[in-house]
Image (cartoon, rainbow, N blue to C red):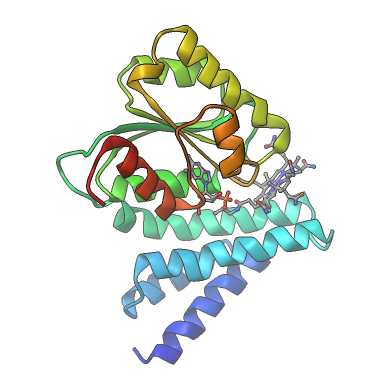
Length: 218
Ligand code: B12
């Protein structure tokens, strides 16, 4: 495929997510892959950049929750096509990770991408879902997760992450488990303040940070 076609398809995918074309996205995504675009290119250049536009529209009050929800579903529809490709990683897991969106927060697109990309990078990932209570994160650590990944997009849910770190310490688990934070409500500085081990700005950064924490070569 000529590069220009690839770029056009990426633009179509991006536009499809922005206008919430749930039905059309799987086919468009498949066409892009069949045409030779890498799954990571479709995800970063098509889907994630579309959600950034959706976020801007939401901030400017051009979009409201229903429109954002439809765009989110369109993105999910595209991700069902990308998921098997992004998850086909090594056979021997590099480590065990549990990821979830913290209590009070239902945003899961970014967290699911992080879970997918970590799986593809060779980690065994337990996806705890959304609205995850501090106790559930602690249980995952007690059950053998070496890294706890917490996602938060609502600033109101930020205190939950400090609570999890405190509970891990209280139950004597903190020495065995690393904590990594991410999501739009989190910053590197905030991660340090609540006593987490690392902050991941995006899915690739999450892989880098988790590898660093577990001593896996980059
Ligand atoms: C989509 C969306 C929704 C969808 C969510 C659908 C879903 N299934 O997730 C719906 C419509 C349901 C929704 C609802 C709400 N939303 Co909303 N939403 C968004 C929006 C537009 C995009 C989020 C998104 O999916 N981005 C795309 C993904 C790929 O990016 P990401 O999540 O940032 O993830 C990446 C990185 O952050 C990182 N990452 C993410 N998690 C993790 C975890 C780890 C461990 C690591 C290392 C990295 C990492 O890697 C990811 C991949 O690159 C944001 C705007 C924004 N700027 O974020 C608002 C936003 C988060 N929402 C907001 C609000 C206010 C709400 C509502 C309260 C609205 C309402 N009035 O009801 C509700 C809250 C519901 C709840 N209790 O959670 C505000 C939050 C403001 C704040 N400061 O707290 C935002 C910032 C919009 C805004 N500017 O006002 N929302």
